[in-house]
Length: 276
Length: 293
Image 1 (tube, each protein chain N blue to C red):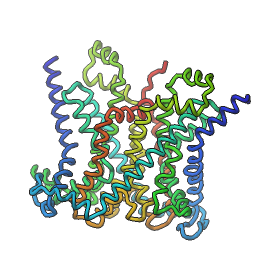
Image 2: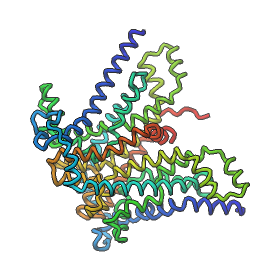
Image 3: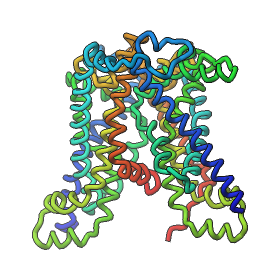
Image 4: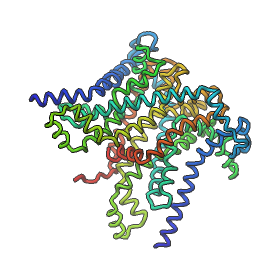
């Protein structure tokens, strides 16, 4: 029995290592390419070790394309969106959990339904609307809708608020606290972990979003990293060292975020799926 | 209604008002407008012109529409089972007490957080038939590798291969589900002398079935809406072999400015998604729900 078990463990281990190689190799290829010369990239057979090591590719990325401007735009859009989405969702989730009123459940079902509605259905009228407002070509279509909350964040925060005992708000009410004071001073501070999870996911979604910037950002001075990289790929298709350096730099914040917030991250994924 | 109830109604509405406004402006109105547009000829510049159901009849006569449906269903029908199966296998392996478990989990999960644009560019280069390492590896094995994204017969398998790199998301969901399986059930199975396979088949699989259903639904929704990775990896080519639904819809709307036609496509997509999801729920007798106490 124990011999069979240790054999099984060995098999598991070998399969896990082989799989890990499959998952890691593309990363290694990305890093390696980002440090090659424009000529070494097209070596046959392909070479894994950059020789010479071209750190200057990263400098070229900053100077040959407005990479830093794209980065600043992405940071601006992402930070604003996260702040707007999380602030509004925190308020909305309170109305969906800590106050009882007729019609609440019905509207909450509407909110859940928006999560499965294909975005293509609302995409075109939204575009027409923003076009008529003269907002196409500005950041406004990307950040103004964030003021109305994210269904996912409302869902997540509502779960969390509902688990807070009612006694706390009841005694505050007896002491004469307004509903807003109970929200801001009692419930919100308790919900910090859920706020962190929501912020993390919204950060990743906006940082990596491609379709919305593609449709609304027509002016290349406003491009985000996603659009800037795609633009570079379509104008200089052979510039693989630059493209891989850019892809790597765009991924680094998300990867760092993942390492620092691994627990929040995995907790968030599983709450959404297992408890939802 | 008492004064207290009326007060709570207004308070509740006040708190949800940001979402309520957004719901009306960014969902309800666009849904209705999109339905209206789908019966019109509309290019944004001039006002929409009512043409009845012609967009819909045109759609079913459009050979590219059939092609995009085929491509989308192909990627879903092959891609979803592969990705659900692979992520389940990895999750099962990681659920064993192996050394360096945390490190493995990180390695498998990390690719799923790489931005879609970066991942798509990387795979376009990784699968390059002449200068990429995949075909070089195959060459070492004595296999003359295919043209991958450049070859119409291999482009869809190549997209599926690239998408498998991102199975970490569903893997983590499976892992959470596996950790919720009561240990007592495995102990009972061991007492009954269950084999490894029987433990999997009669304990793990039923207990995990709600999570499998969740991953299946998410898989259907995301593969019907697949856009970014394909836009960047192939742009729909070669010879439209990877022109998927969302990409063709985008082209009609924002490159050809056929907003009415694209709106009709959006409604057909909504109908297809609804039919698929209803179908999944209707046949979800295999999902085991623990009696809730």
